Amino acid sequence: MRSTILKAILAIGGTALGLAATPSQAECLSAPPNLVEAGYLTVGTSLTAPPMGFMNDDKPSGFDPEFIAAVAEKMCLKTRIVNVTFQGLFPGLIARKFDVIASQIGITEPRKEMFDFVPVFVGGLRLVTQKDSGLKFQTESDVCGHAASIVAGSTQMAALDKVKGDCPAGKPMTLKVFSNQSEALNEVAKGTVNVAYVDWPVAAYLIQQRPKDFVEASPVLSGKGPNTERNRNGIVIRKGDSATQDAVAAAVKAAMSTGAYDDILKRWNLADGDVRKVN
Image (cartoon, rainbow, N blue to C red; front, side, top):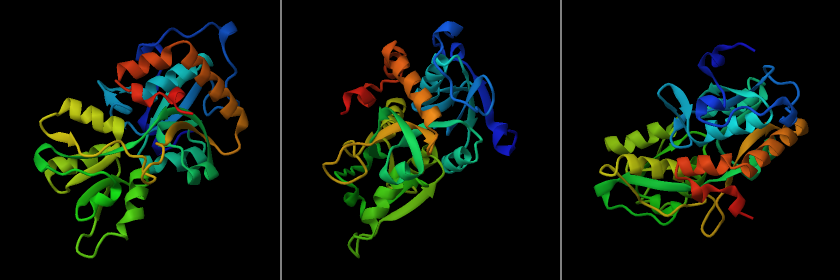
């Protein structure tokens, strides 16, 4: 299937990502039927948010592309990455431009009505400010009176939209919407907003890379209200495509049992996202 969206395609295999060699044919798990391209698991993702998914030396890097490559490897498939904006992920999956989505997608009740999932990570959200701002937030309601940057269609956007209308008249919340988390964070650096609301791994990576510029300004939040569990993130499957879901779930389990999952979590300092530690 060739379209303008596939101009962003980058073919990667397990070996290119530093993973183990492809198993022998006898060891292969069943692959999903009716793949977009035979021999490949075509994956929709948005490579704009290190350490979950980003371009590094012109190669897809981070948890999402590396773990989905490990999953595909268990089915003796290579991965073909389709790098699109976040807004293009769900329409692209529905249109069968790719087989699955692997892009830190939170498993929410509204999304479960439209898609199926295989859980692979524990997400969470964090507010980030300039280091010397002095701002601290305990919940999304504390963003009242401030300008915040968010990603269009994200869990963060839904969370802030939910409380925005309840802000006091003298403390309105201003939201600036962007296509990815890197753009949202750049607005904080430029001083055009007070705070960015992003995924916790993105915040951790950013602060590690630029400790003089940014600081964590909140605990890890669920985005669903106080005292609620963080969302799990998952590989997204078309609703009702049980054959693909079963094949991917079996391959995920195999990748976890052989240590590939642990290696990738360790590589990107993401142990707090281990989905096996969540009931």
